[in-house]
Image (cartoon, rainbow, N blue to C red):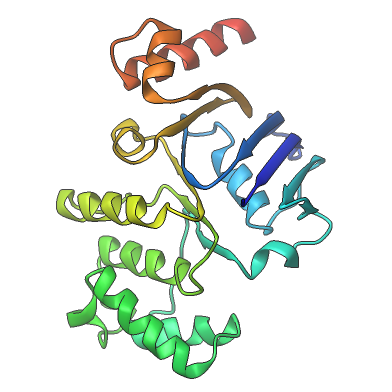
Length: 245
């Protein structure tokens, strides 16, 4: 079984509060909803797990292999949609995805088939030859989702993926993540409670770089004495601020 284990991760930046403060968590196949306010450390954690940043201390392992020391152990099976996903404005969707597929070493025939499938999946078939500079924010976000899925990843990390999506696109994306969650680990990082509640059976609440609580929606509501996931979320975040004070 796939396993991603994070142990006592810390991340310091000069002249800023500690971004991660001893965070530990173990993940297995399924969707983990990582829920926290802006500045909670979610994006920092995602960047470390995607091997684009290194922790100040702590360990992260993929199937027992330290990905801080051996990042290539995870890169071939990783799909990553960062919060600040950028595009080349003069390329169209097919050219952009073909370029990224080549960078990741996908054979040309496989890449072409995969790109055709993904354009259907993210509803960009009719816009596939338009320059990306003319894409709306929602269209760019859908393209970002497609590039994250190019290599059919075993670990899929998506950071604030529904920003810029209209209600219909948001529902479509939620369904997509649910369908993808079978034999892979999916991490959905967001501050939008409804996204997590709709997709993730496993929810982790973080703030100030620390894991505050983890469980199913029902477990978090019982532990907080709340009647909703949003109420549970607010309870744990507020409690952590009181403890810090």
